[in-house]
Amino acid sequence: MSSNTFGKIFSFTTFGESHGEALGVVIDGMPAMVKVDYDLLLSDLERRRPGQSSLSTQRMEGDKPEILSGVFENKTTGTPIAVIVRNTDQRSKDYSNVAHSFRPGHADYTYTEKYGIRDYRGGGRSSGRETLARVIAGAFAKMALKHFGVTVNAGLVGVGEVMADIENWDPPFLPPLYAPKGIWEEKMTERIEVARKEGDSVGSIVECRIDGVPTGLGEPAFDKLDAVLAHAMFSLGAVKGFEIGSGFSSASKKGSENNDRIRMNGEKPLFETNNAGGILGGISNGDQIILKTYFKPTPSISFPQETISDDKKEIELTIKGRHDPCIGVRAVVVVEAMAATVILDFLLRRRCDRI
Image 1 (cartoon, rainbow, N blue to C red):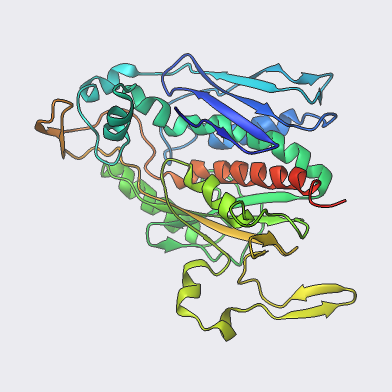
Image 2 (cartoon, rainbow, N blue to C red; image 1 turned 135 degrees about the vertical axis):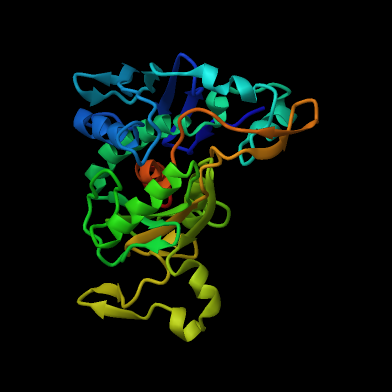
């Protein structure tokens, strides 16, 4: 069996391969009467689209969505929303040399072991191109979140050893980096360009901040809000780390340093700090939710690499094709999308908590 559906009430199923005819998504549980913001949908797809600059793969896809169902007179109808995006710039011949070999860092070997067959063209289903379906689901989630006063914004805050000053948080962030504005932008760009010219790649960090989330979202014990957010981010193919609030640094702190003191601001509780990242006991506390997602370097690099063939012989492989030198650049909007779907799902679930 396979798992291609995410979410409980607001859920979506993605389908399609990197070099197939099309990719798409079926969204279920979308509330009716939500005005469809086509500009938002197209803008988010544009942010993820390849070929925008030298900082991403030069595959030239238009990524034009075709809405097949679930929308009438520019409003959602409450029925399943089906959207497809057709592939137009596949170069499957670029992958002919990996048809019978396993690319280091890719899912080639594990897909073959699991299914006994794999689509080697661009990685097939394991390709990062699958994320465009998530971006579509996320765009529709954002449309609904407007009615709850919730906003989701992500930005590129780390490229290799170069880190942004994440206190300078003034979204939306602009192309080509989609990073907070500052002196680090030039250093990030240079770091990616050096990797690209060398035929190499570099890792990255994307931070996401969610505002307007009410208290009470999260379903302990196994569907805690932070646990599901982590699930959402780790479902992205290149993610190797996730943290929320003070995250990894909390392991080296004392409780007196990490606890967020609570005061009253009029009749409303006020957290003096936000080491919790807006979530306590797996339930939102009404504060800003802050999370970071860590992406490994793109495994497709131009260096000859040692690997094995599908008949288990040791070989040397040089990967061809067009690849992102830094995954985080185009992953910013994908992180936003996954976070938005999680928050909307929990907002809809929240209505079942109590009479």
